[in-house]
Length: 402
Image (cartoon, rainbow, N blue to C red):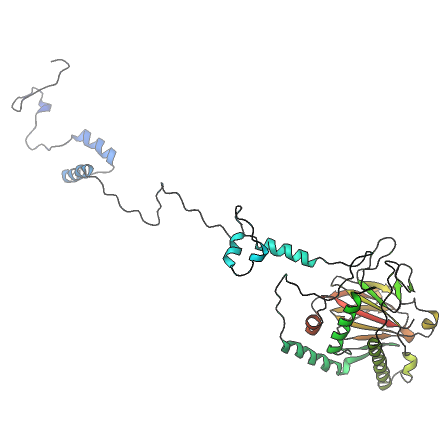
């Protein structure tokens, strides 16, 4: 029947020899079909047992093997990596300063640690320089700050430095005759005396007529803070006046305790010159005339402060004619001091002035050019920074007789 199914009984025969099954014929697809199956399934063998096993495998539902922990299912949402501490979450509210107490985890999670500390340090670092009328005087000492935690040196370290300073004061090089009329007394001021002088200057410096930043009429400012005792020295007019033009403040009086330190230093210089011998030392009073100091310029240099070469020539004619000396106290960080006969830094001599040193120049050296080129940071003794609380920098007192 055209287009119908070819229904045959089991016993019926076919005229086509290709439809007969020969004895020993293998059941299953023919070679053509087998080759196509092999192409679909991959490499296979012509062995019937191999093919039968393969056909059986096709009918068996494969068992799903459990996924290993290392291979994540594609349908599972990947776990987001933890964010680093340095990248703060955008949606987290900043932590208030009062929360910086016990919970380190909350501080880190907030991501506001560096920002909060920076802002607090900035507010604590701001200070008034006292260069404008009505501004608060500059404080040469550090106050009690809540901005940071400082590791203080032990009392043993402080006492060790004090003993070392006393030993250096007794060494053979403690007194140096630099040039006629110029003597350096190394470590002359005892550690306890240094602390007393700093605290006294601080007390005077925060009051009326205390530390300020002097400037000239053209607006140029000196890179230091200054306070005058006895009389006020005006850098713009290069003269001593009773009140400073900036705010009309009257300078504090000269403390008697400071004048005693000056007298002791002059006596020590005279004794040294008399013992050392040499030209001109037979009459120490002529080499370095004695003085009764009634004025003092107190300068505080920050670690970036300096002072160009200049002469101290603004005292009275009588004082200058007698070549009355200038007595200089150094406290705090070490300074490089320049001096010479001309205003030329290339030709100037250099010495290091450390905390406790006293420099005296009078007689033939009264009119030398001198200045400060650099301040070496972190060279101040521990007892100066911890007991006296002096800021980083150098405190210098220059006494003279008006």
